[in-house]
Length: 399
Ligand code: AN7
View (spheres, rainbow, N blue to C red):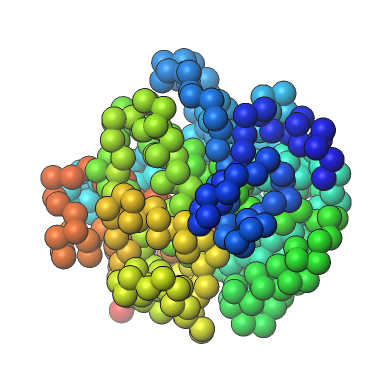
């Protein structure tokens, strides 16, 4: 990559830092792993943020309100669909304490992935690629397909065969993505993207899975919006975890607010996985230095049916540094939470998202969270993503 292109793409003071060995590098859209030790990287800005909440609040709520915190040059025109600015809804009936849900289903394609894609696809548009490529359990695919269409780029998607919720598949088709089905789980699809495209050094399709740290920079705005809207930092944030990019990004957001003086504390981060796909829960409980992988992940929450989360190290850091936890919930608990949110609160989320409420209930039960604490649950995706599961709950109601 030509360094003058990178100069136009990123702010002058952006650098990338390895999460393991701490080595620093100049920003490069194609650098995903540390050239010294192979770990993942975080982008950082050296400048101290000189912006106040009142200044920020003059702008439209959404990802680009926080432009000072984003690594892209302020001269770049973003590829945007108005992502972010999602409702923060106070729970009335299902929240045992003071709980809110950040309803990410209200994003343009119905999930939080849009916050990252606006950054990732903006980069792709400015580096002369033909298109973008992702492996996906469904939402990343739907989002990448829409943003690629918006940018006039092609989109190649690798999906676990037969295991993607129909709404997400339909979106990918609608936006004209080229779809390839892979045997096995998401992990096999991601291996194929890494081995057949990324590691071969091809530069035609820009990869936008969450080892791409630029994409995660968009997702960190979930943290900014929560503090922006509440006016304070919640005690606990509960996030459904699959490939573990989102919990890492949200933690980075809170960390940056604290460092810049825009927040006076940081929340505890609780990651929730489905019992049949809980590699991070196992790894964290055993304090293992290696990821304890799950070979055949299984759960009704297909969005988080992932056995080898690529961001596992970043997510462990988020949970450990924040004094948080990883917990698992059963498929029945997930469905119960989904039904409760829908029927008692009027909030329709997909199963993976309901894992956050199921996890909150469990956390209260085991004393991990106190009733008096303010909690924000991340409602990652819209109920319409997975109509088959809705119909299953409907038949359950009539029993
Ligand atoms: C609704 O779309 O991995 O822990 O390929 O769709 O950042 O992976 C989706 C993940 C939670 C987990 N909730 O986020 C994909 C994909 C919903 C999701 C997650 C996903 P990460």
